[in-house]
Amino acid sequence: MTAPYLAGVDIGGTKITVSLANTNGISVKVYQNVRLEGSHTAIPEQVDFLIGYACNQIGVQPDDIMAVGVSSCGPFMKEMGQVQLVAPNLCGGLVKDRDIIPNNWTWIPLESVLSRRWGTLKIENDAVAAVVAERLFGAGRGEDDLVYVTWSTGIGGGAYIDGRLIHGKNGNAPHIGHIYLAEDGPQCGCGNFGDMESLVSGVAIARDYGGRGTAEDVFKAYHSGDRKAKEIISKAIRNFARGLASINAILDTGVIVIGGSVFMNNIDILLPGIKDEFYRSFPVLSEGVDIRPSALGTYLGDMAALSLVMPDEWIRKWQENELWELAPPAVVLDR
Ligand SMILES: [Zn+2]
Image (cartoon, rainbow, N blue to C red; front, side):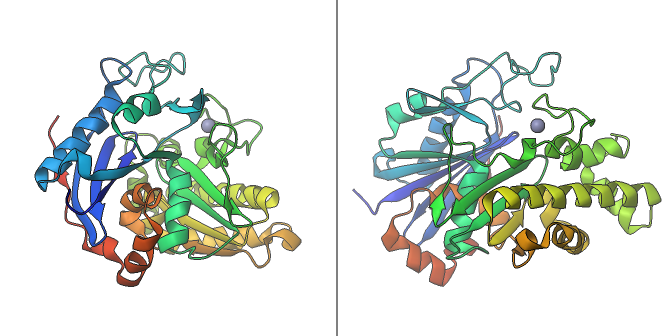
């Protein structure tokens, strides 16, 4: 056996990324569009294939993988203690009359399939895995009361309270995107009307502008002085900050780390506005909460998955040398 490796698997709504790491850093990274057709075991089988493919790229035997960490979009359900994915952006059978996903799955047996092959396996919601990574390697280093929120095509969250990572009965806590913010609002992909994701996600920003472009197009319009774009983005900022205030009212946190592509690409516009609105909320609760951008940025997906299974004796070396920054570019697989 050669030096042991970890596999980090990041399952998103559009692609799966697998990275293999050893004590010296990330050795290889591959990604492929997520398979949304065929049997409902297609995604875990694709994960098996991609880990094998990555091993092959660097001449490592799959037996040398000592642990697999999986960071996945959710939500999860647990059946006999095993994680199933019940994610509306992967399972086409979950929300009626919404046929944008080309399958009829209502759940994906992620853990039962992967655990057949991988003995040491840890699966977490992607935002939960992200808070683990930010606490070990990023903007929340060493913080015992820490919330991570992603502002991307969707909205997600993960949290430590009193130094303990919180999970809840199915591992979904705190699923911040689906807290209600408005009595009457647009419909979310989950079926709710007026929840945080339905009001502020990247998809929502693009929809509010007319639905022909992306959220980034709306930010471009904002920069060129477009009044409608300014209104939409200001409203999204207010609603996002109110979501943060709500989660803080429940969790009484010390630090909030924000990541996700919508936020990270537009920190200059979004962060000051979020702070303005957040600190306007009940001062006894909001004062002293530190709001920071993610420090891992584009490395967060890989590090979230790897952090779940990284041995303690590797962590200090990775922290001191910021080894994630040496990751090679991803090998992109055609379907
Ligand atoms: Zn929702």
